[in-house]
Image 1 (cartoon, rainbow, N blue to C red):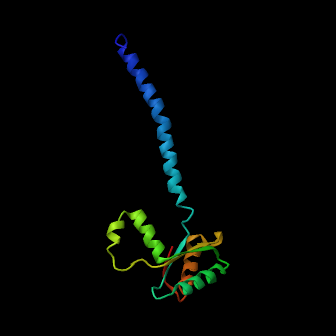
Image 2: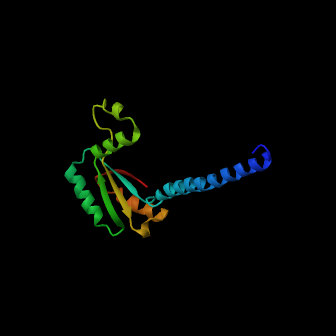
Length: 140
């Protein structure tokens, strides 16, 4: 190594580069996969249920929405489930334990059919869904 320092240095640089390239490519691919996975649900509509609605009324809404031809799937997240998930994800678990009541509303998640996933069509569907009496408001 001391006899030919430049050749040794070049060899070390080539080895370092050859190890760095695959690792960098792996990190880039993983990040792109993570970012692109969120695009599949881009057309999902969140309908926030009015606070005064009972569980039974909300379940009736879910069943009624499932019959819409524009809707592919409907899922329901109760306010208790939303709070549990928020505690798990946010890191505010202990602070949230001090709340007297659950501030989160129940949510109905609606996945439109492929025809209604385009922005304009999704907005038309959202406007239609917001007319349901159990719905406080909706978000794309």
